Image (tube, rainbow, N blue to C red; front, top):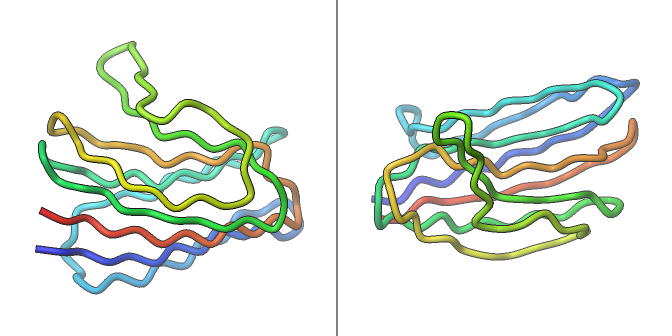
Length: 120
């Protein structure tokens, strides 16, 4: 089974509007957005062990990106923090978990276009 989601994250006047278009309405994914002085955007799909998360993003300016997940108080970073404008990559989940694609350092006029799919 394959789920496709297109996520557009943009900032205008300090707000972080999100539009999501899903090929499968019942797909299991979460979008979490926080705005503050260090504005942050996250897309957090749930993956089963062995599923592959394929994703790509393009940003108007350099942003800090990482892929992480939480186990209790511990945060693990399968993809360490890095400053990028664009990235196309895949990640195979080693365990059943919610994995978060995260962008930090977004400015008021930053636009990040994200596309991801999950494959069994």
